[in-house]
Length: 111
Length: 115
Image (cartoon, chains in turn cyan, green):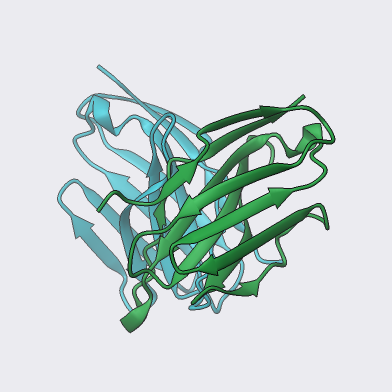
């Protein structure tokens, strides 16, 4: 069935360093790839998304890249700050509004 | 806007009892989603509605689960009878899909504990 694999499950970085989270999807028909950030006790919140007709998208310190051939997409956070500490989820959708979520990455930014 | 509103925020019940979770989507949104989050299975879509009509309920685990959306501003997820394995955080999310926008706005969740 449809599947999204996400790695790593936990990630610790020093403040100011970069963090990279990677996802792989199985359904080649997927065309929308959002990234959500979930803080403790809260619901997931969209931080950036990318569509299949674009290879890269950037928003300040956050960027997402997409390799459709390899069915990979990645989240890059530069100059990490303590407030970036959270659980990050990738997801893949194909226009049916039904997302398949990855298993999440717990990012810890060490001050 | 207050965002997606869910109630209660926490629910503790005993096995066999009926549980009703409530959601008020963002005004004007035409899609509503119910998710369940557990450590073992992550974030799973249970069911979603478009214009108050259930579109895909393939994620509903079994007949003990049911969801309704009587109007554009209210939805319920009911579990009857509840079991300990239903313990999880349940999220409601809403979205406005006109023009192809896909962002889903999540509520704060209801943490359900079934003893």
